[in-house]
Amino acid sequence: MREALRPGDELIVVDSASRQPARGEQVAGEIDAIFIRCERPGVCRARNAGWRQARHGFVAFVDDDVWVHDGWANAIAGAFVKHPDVAFLTGRIDVPPAQADTERPVALKDDTEPAVLDAHTGGVLGHSANMAARRDALEKVGGFDESLGAGGRFRAAPELDLFDRLFAAGLTGRYEPDARAWHDQWRGRRELVKLDYAYGVGTGARLAKLVRSDKRRARAVAVDALWRRGARQFSIDLLRGYETGAIFALSGTAGTAVGFARAIFVPVRDGHFVTHRHDEAPKRHAWKQP
Image (tube, rainbow, N blue to C red; front, side, top):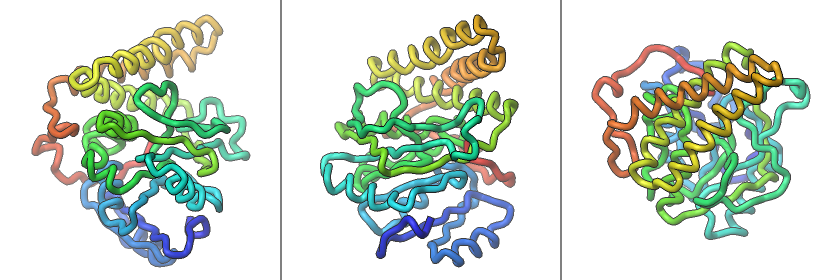
């Protein structure tokens, strides 16, 4: 990671309630990184702690199972300079060459052409495993909703919710394939079924927000989650005899329904779910980012 940065860039390592904080601090010291310890788990809590500590106007995020191209930081900085009206960027995420035969890759965005991202853009916008944002844009919307994502009350979709709120604030983003990264595909089928369910829960929670704030976008998200990636995909995979794929689709659809039911009555303040006291209690377990 350090090799991909430019002179003057800062590297921040956030330890999200791990059981071995001393090891994380040691690693951060070895790569000349700023170390932050979060006593409560949650990927969005960790990301918020990181960008609030950062000193520069542009903040980039990667996950712990992602590695980046040597020109990654230059590509991000260059895109922000070239497109001063852009609030956030998502980068290209590929499967590592050694894992090219992965059955169902996770968190990919491998389009080869750059694109503008706005409230009307469909398909995959990108992933927080490889993204960047202007600090003032994050401040404008309060950063990531800490109820979403791994370790949170609703277990996924933190970047999509962030994009929703940035679009609602009148801001736009951009996809930049030159900001390239590779995502380790370490999950087996059982973990993927659980992950699809978690993705569904996050999508349902996101949908529960949108039906109160942006009904047009809510309809688009519902059609994509419940029809294209849900019932339609389930039927296609079943007809093809791909039972595992049908299970993936069914798991995601079930998660979406559960997430929506759990989130629809949760109050939203300034675009963020209002947390309950028990949600804020420290947890002792460690977790792995989806």
